[in-house]
Image 1 (cartoon, rainbow, N blue to C red):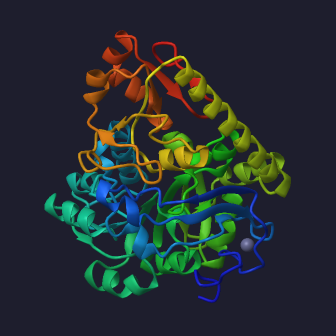
Image 2 (spheres, rainbow, N blue to C red; image 1 turned 120 degrees about the vertical axis):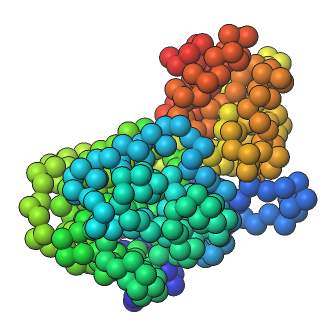
Length: 417
Ligand SMILES: [Zn+2]
């Protein structure tokens, strides 16, 4: 526990001296802190910058916000995106087959959200337990019949989990590894909750895709870490776990699914060595790659701001589509607010009626896109752009145009270009 969250100025992985940031995104509110109009005056901002530790290869943000401030009333419900629901179904099916899961097996999910994934295991008769720190979301999972502990997973949770559920055959953490400042203690707790023959499966956005595709907007306070496979291997080793397999996934703009086990439980798959060699070859373990990325992000900001400014000067009315957390990094870093974008729309009723943090752009229901007819709408969740364009054919048919901000700002000509 010596190198956990309290170690200011030190690498959260290896405890070494933390280097200077390669990208500084300024001072912004928390990307998930959607707010009501009367809360605007009390909005808090925190510095947001990211650095690379050459000793343990771990990319991390340089200032942490206490997790209690981040996740207790988290507004994200997984079940509101069609593509994530489908991804979850496929993941459950593939794990049931791979690990031969049945009625005597145990599946534990960390950050289980509203039960969007575990319900697929339940349908197959596999006993499950979810752990979800956001109280409102854990309550929603319980209402849906998915057993869920409302607490943070970590060393303190191990006793309760083992007593109530026992060790698990499969432990899943989708988009959770990035969120845990005390990552060494977290993985140690995973090892204690895992059967000797079990496997822990984690999915997280892949650092290589973030760099290749310019996905800087996925950097926000909730995401403490941005992982290469090389960094995951170091962390696993420190927790006495072994990286035994890896597969690339297309979700979230490119993610890795990694498999960890107690050392020697099964043979390590060739995909692991192949990807580690690929990371060495493309410079992912070299500091210069990161400084280049910082320069590219600054150039993207200039390009987007100039494109939107040009459209405004032509008298065009601009809005946005979606209210994902990453959109807030993009808008706040680029200084885009209600003077540029009139409103955004989002399918989640939990976000409708609120304002985006920082930019204070109002979030409306998707029908408002047709009702208010802006000339162009910036797609903030660019990773599901195809899904959005397909749902909004009528907007495009009536002359509306979508703008994709990333990897480079582009106005889509009708459908997806
Ligand atoms: Zn380090």
